[in-house]
Amino acid sequence: VNPGGAGGGGSVATDTIFDAKGDLAIGTGADTAQKLTVGSNGMTPIAASGETTGVKWGYIVKEDTFPSALCGGSYASGWSYVNGAEPSGTGACGSGYTSGLPQQSFLSFADGANTYAAFNWKLPSTFVALVSVTYHFATDGTSGNVALRYGAMCFGSTDSWLAGTPSFTDDSIFTSAASAGTYAEKAEVHSTTNVDSCSATGARVAMKIGREGTDGGDTNANTLYLFGITIKYTARVE
Image 1 (cartoon, rainbow, N blue to C red):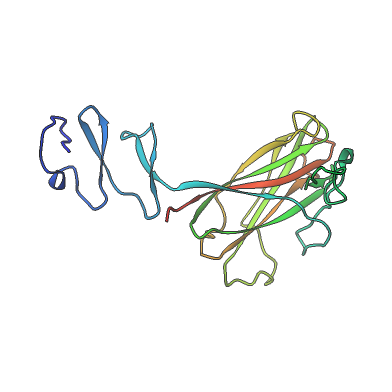
Image 2: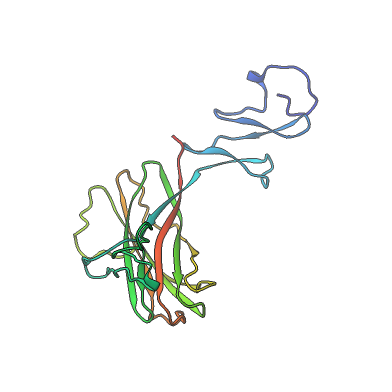
């Protein structure tokens, strides 16, 4: 390696471009290199054209998708559920499609009501940070916006999930345009990084996902059908 760009011999092991454990020599042009210092534990080199070296250290990004299919039962104060209805006879948690066709799982959130679904997510052992939660839904009318609610709270592996009344570590309402077509599925991304520093092995994030129908930003006078959510997060490489 010859960072001066003159080319030629010399020992890589004693090259002056290296100053510390983990340093990498990254080519930045013809016969030219620049040092990239090592990242944190669990990071991996990632191609990044905006960087001087064209490379940066970062965590990998992963996604988990969860379907909504709650039927019956009830939840403690602050949580609720809605049974799947059957628009146009397509079936949900009931008898399903006609013979030979699969069921679709969804939850229906009526106009003008505050209704929610509950999702539990066990943090992977390599978890670093939550990036976003995507809502997958459709409306049976195309006008106006729907107000969506996101809440999250964390339980450590030794916490009592029944102790006291939990407060959401992230509780927010945001709006999304209705489906482009009646019953057409759409995805709305809610960016969030707050899970109450919930990163211990065995921890669990409880999520409250739903529609805030009484919010002034909800101007769609139709039912919303939630198919599920996708959780995007960063993770260490092990």
